[in-house]
Length: 492
Ligand SMILES: [Zn+2]
Ligand SMILES: [Zn+2]
Image (cartoon, rainbow, N blue to C red):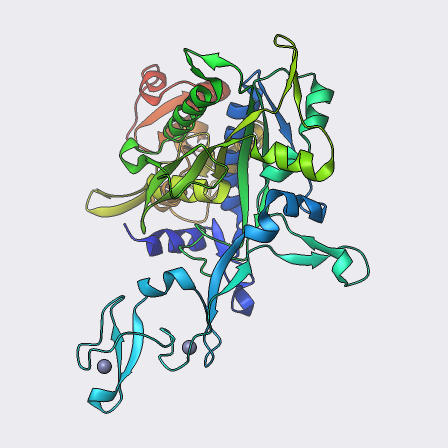
């Protein structure tokens, strides 16, 4: 599957737009449209409920984006959160030094009167045998030696733009948790092991953003720092290692719980030379995105590095008193770090289907009902019958108190269904002539509406009085076949 298909659907149906598009767009920033914001909120809500509300050992936090600059010195970001960059002296483009060899390069070949060729990455010119030394984009400029470029966005706090007022937009939400460790521990009277979860924006001045919302300069993280007593053991293993395993399994299962196909997920262990210097072990959950397997979430054992660094830099003891052993310990940290934007993208890509129905193409998003931006669409079969329209609007108002429900009468019913399929609305509800009856003919209505299932396209007739009960089950734990069995089917 092609990413362009998803990008186009996202724009056409109001999921994701390019930021500042009327001005030509910014580099790699994205805006979530009316359906996108619902989807993203649903992903974040599911994550928060599962990881905070349903667990007795977890609490939440919402730290500020701007923090004391000393945080970034202690965390190592100021000195080490850098990429080696080279600049082209002719076109001024900037490249990551370590990615240059992976780029196709433009070449003006002296062996063919200076004709312009694009040569494949890492290959020599087929005519003169030369290898790339100049800028791969313009083929003319010399490249500067590599320089370290910090990925943090810099700004100034207060009215004066001077060095003492420099502040940074946080490049990760994790540090907000570490610096609040003591506050949360004391305020909530917690016992190890426990975790603190946070969802929030982070910023990285990526030089090569791309692949739609996969890598952008402003993004939202869903992070957990789970603190473990390193002196404890579980089943004969150090507790941090055992708990790390548990988190990997839990997070791997989470994506599948919300509909990601198991074939499209895999775990990838970081090799020893790839690990951050403080990490004992890191495993990535990767998703098979259109551009290939890429990281969806990283789950690292950060040891006691962060708390020790902040304790040293701040002079505050960031320890936990182990009552049993009567000693102060610096907890180890297991960090499941997920991207909200990446998760949304994976859920969208995974839900996308094209089917053939009676000789016509049907596009649908088989989004999990908890993630679907719209839950119910109320559609009038005939919009020239005022009593049908009035009842449909009344039902929308009624159902909207419980579920995100929309009303649409801007096309014929077949097209209205297709539009809802395309944005993943699990159920449509249709009010028709049979519902309201025909006064002129002296026929009374049956007081039932048609409820249609997105995935099977099955339809049943449900009494209006039972709609809340039916949707409670359909949008809760019930499944379509079981709920539908109690009602007459219809093909109309
Ligand atoms: Zn250049
Ligand atoms: Zn050549």
